[in-house]
Length: 434
Image (tube, rainbow, N blue to C red; front, side, top):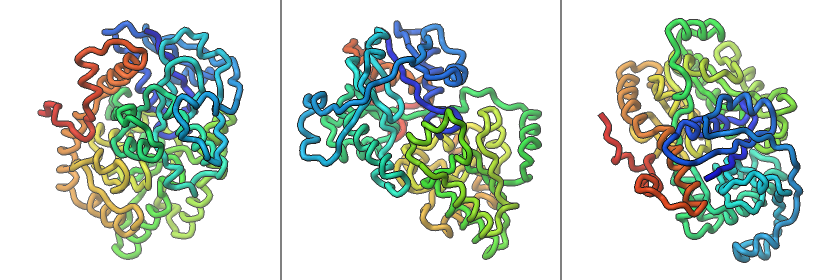
């Protein structure tokens, strides 16, 4: 069986989608217990180098042909008249024969972009943040998502999301029936595929980024929903009302001057104007310039060192399908505090502290607890080690493979069926935890 995976990301610019997709592709390439072959579709040498080396069961194909845009109302007749009467004018790219020419049995579109083609397809909508926070997107991008996402969810043979929270959101808002068409497959820490840093590596990383001796870490692209502004308010509150100076280190692209190769990614995310100027102004207004360090995008091997050097991870995001930084913090023994919204509580369970991300004082008090309470931090590390055992890229990749097999009409093994019946984020009880 041949599966095509359409890579369409800008590494270092697209937030968590990029490392998660790379981890999936690498792990699929390591599975040797099945007959599957994978065609990895890339648009540039940069994407090819980013994914290199690939497995013996994988090969690269460069996307050289363009897809002709077109109105697809006629093509949508088979999904019913769910769009009839809508004011939207859904436009999907239509394959000009490129996807069909690859000879694949299944085509996987793992980002929110989708191309209508004659090959049975699998689609990852990731989340519907644009409906919850339309103010964080350009109007044209909200319209684009609402043209592509619901159509793709109805047309694709299978839809994959990372959490039950997102599944409920997608099925209810888009009327997907039966709900079983939307499959929950939890992810795992991308940094598990990165070598463990040595003591010398950690020391080198500390010097490279000129890190303070004690700091809180927030890895997040500078997008509005990541809620940097309230986090800065919380730090100012601790300083002004508790006399507690908490240094903060932030990683992630600032979207300040993106390279040309990343402009399409910005358009895909819908952020026409960088949020960084507002963050920069807030730093100056609150007199936090010397206390908060934005170091930009860092490579995976450095990120592991940053986790190990940090006192804790704080994640005040307003919206998340699931959080890769939470997974990554657990890998390197970093205590976690995060928002109590969307899928985060079911991901963290008892292995982290949660707070209201709309309340800077609540954020501040939670940070203060982790910054000053050694016993609490050690308790959370112990719980995190247990919780981390529930997530594994091999299990995730095998679940994706089971979806590919089902989409192609292949007979599923008992292991395949078990994986597709099991949401191990919410129900980890099937895992034997030491």
